Every structure is written in C-alpha cells, then in structure tokens.
Amino acid sequence: MITIGRLLSEDRPAWEVLFRAYIRFYERELPQAAYDRAWAEFGADTRMHALGAKLEGRLVGITHFLVHANTSSDDVCYLQDLFTAEEVRGRGVARALILAVADWARARGCPRLYWQTQEGNARARRLYDQLAVNRGFIRYDIMLDRPAPPAA
Image (cartoon, rainbow, N blue to C red; front, side):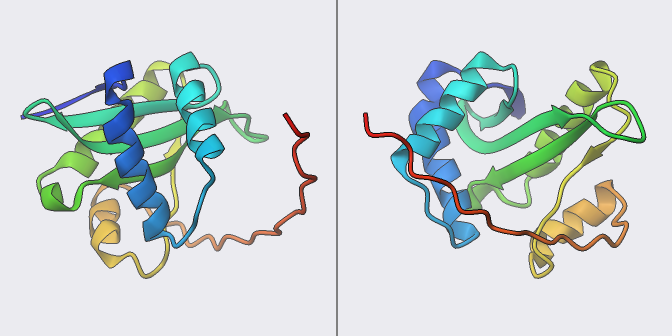
C-alpha cells in the first residue's frame, strides 16, 4: 500500500538519493548547497512544499511543488519535480503523488495544478496524458548570469 505524506527529518537521506537521481535524469548537476537549501525550504513548508510516497515504510517517490500568483485567476500550483525509484515504476506511485498534490492545492483554493516534462519522456507522458490535458505550450528559457555568492 502506498502512503503519501510530508517528508520527515529521517527521510532526508532517502529523499536526497531520489532527488539526485531526478537531477541526473535531466542531465544536470547541483552543488550540495542546493540540496540543503531545498530541504530547508521543505521543512519550513511556506514557499516550497514536498511530499513523499512510501511503500512498506520505504521512501520510493518524491514531489516538490509551490503556489504562485497568476494574472488571470487565483493563485495556481506548479508541480516542479516528480520522481519515483525505478523499481516501483508502474505501481501507481507517481499517480498517487500527483493526486495528493492536486488535493493539497484544491484544499488551498488553487483552481489549477500544472507541470511540465521533456517531450521525449514517453513513459511519464503516458501517465500524464491520463491525468491532465496537454495544452500544447512550449517553454522557453533565458539563462541569466548570477553573481557569485559572497564568501562565507
């Protein structure tokens, strides 16, 4: 049975393994400080939020999400990250996480939950096509140079 809930302090090691695998999946690298910052934000549970999925008491899936202002509606919920351990894929973990975020957002008055994935992520898109509508938007990014953080 899949259980969904907030991440607990003892989930940190397993969460980091899953989040690092997610980052690798998208061929990115993050410094340790980014993982530490995200974990602190999830603990505060004010700007960024996280849920975990457990099977038999083991953390096997994570999702990170946030609420943001919207110019044409009430605030909306953006599901930023979703990842499940490879050995549990196809067992309903990702679906349970998405539906839990939808319930969370609905309870807070959000009229919409949305997310994005890479076009070639066919396995995930099969699930997403069952749960949501692809409205055909294309995402563009401008990478902005950031000044180096001050030395500690």
